[in-house]
Length: 74
Image 1 (cartoon, rainbow, N blue to C red):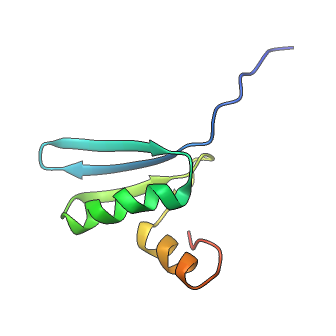
Image 2 (image 1 turned 135 degrees about the vertical axis):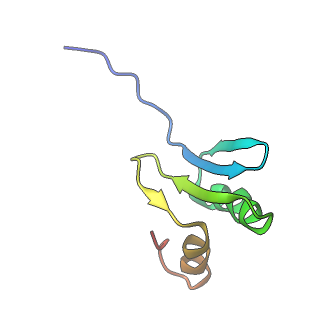
């Protein structure tokens, strides 16, 4: 039997910027959506959020889902 150390849940925000790649990690999807949306507004390319299971979240669709009282739209 092997010991597996549980990894903390992290949402990774990544983008391509003029001076290199940007990357931040957050514990909550809503927290990750804030810099993702500001990076989009700043004109950075390929802005994406990856959830702890490796799935992708769309920053704008996530915000719309929360504002409308529903679950995040992936």
